[in-house]
Image (cartoon, rainbow, N blue to C red; front, side, top):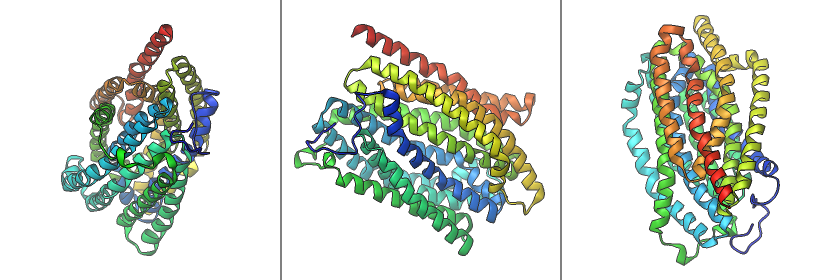
Length: 456
């Protein structure tokens, strides 16, 4: 597919050919890119947890949902651009594609610094509201402050990579994350093990790595002919901005609502103690690896749906969605079995044995939570794939409604559950949230596609 009159080997046309093969081929570089991106936090956790201590790991884990919300803001902003751009690719509309590129440049410039400043000012409040234990407060503040400082580079990287993916170039995610992860690992070892900077060193390594990812994505965009803006493109289109805002607002509202539920749970787990929090954090690192694979496929589905929506191929969208949901379900089942077989060797990597009592407490929490949350991913996987589909089809309100139900279920589980099933309530809350939201996003997908197919 060519938008600007220049052929490019990196372009993927998803409006023709086998849907499952196209999405898989597009998603494979994203899988490895996402896995490398998750290695950021995993390397931080392993280095900090093993060589600084359980409390240090807890200092990162006790704000995990804050970090998740920041990443969600970056991801949702990028996804709004990706959906709008992939529809233009499906329509072969190069002029509007370039208008989206220019809007992306302006929004990165306008949004990055103010958001960073507001969150930096809110750090003391965040730490206080989340009931961070006194023994880890200072480390938590240090890590969160530097993590917030990654927002400008993260925003530019995510939007640049999303536009490249919309155009069909999924390899840039893999390349950017490979480069930045290598940098992150090397600097983690240097800052934490050699220079003894502790949690602050792990955060600093992540900041530098994020800048490297941004630079790699920008270089790829500059080289792509379809991104070369002409003078007549240097004007913001009000209708385009409204479209981007309509796409972004429900997605971020959904993320915001989900994070409220997560923050509510996090506040309560922090109150139990730093060892319990460290165990939850160790488990979530394993979960993040598996989730990264599903999220890569989810991104492929978004581009596939967007391009075919632009080409008005509704039957093709439905067929591809069914096939990829089946594939995702089988893939996550295989990964769950693999983790179950190896977790007894993996989980201890995150935990220091210097304090035997804290180690045992953390390991028990991590082990139980790992079993429960991974089994719950059998519900999460189809929910993610249907959620991104209904968003791309132009109905993000359903995803927002699903987010509200997730919030309600998480809060209810944590408020009521402990008196009935004890600490297991903290382990099942994600699965319960995914369970109630799956039909909210899945049913409208097939209803809308069925109507469009009958009309055509």
